[in-house]
Image (cartoon, rainbow, N blue to C red; front, top):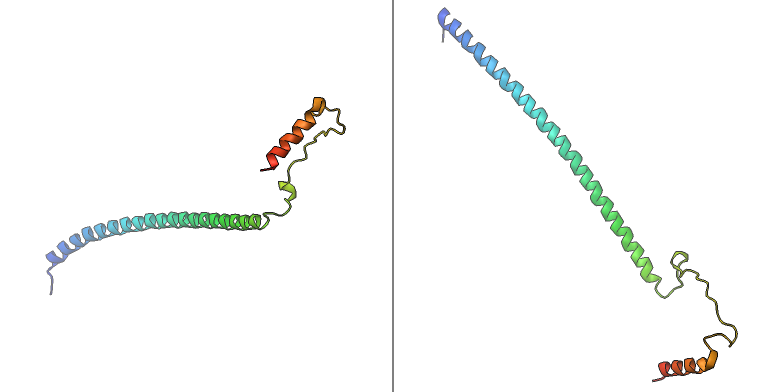
Length: 119
């Protein structure tokens, strides 16, 4: 197909407008791609943080499970130093003149103990 000079001139003007529109679309597509890439990067970072948090929680749960198993195995054993009952000073009466045993109270205590321990 052979174009006349007039047709070539018109086509050149038309191509100029089409090229300008195509470059504008190209620029918009690049910007959209860059935006999407930024969103993908942000989403990937969020996934990494979420995965790390899940792994952290699973590790904590596994440690808790191990600690519980160890605690169960220690049932009936002597308590560990950090779990021992605190040492609370208790004054014990060493003679029978204490107020607890005054006026025959020791007989009441003995009788109460006997009643409580015998069916």
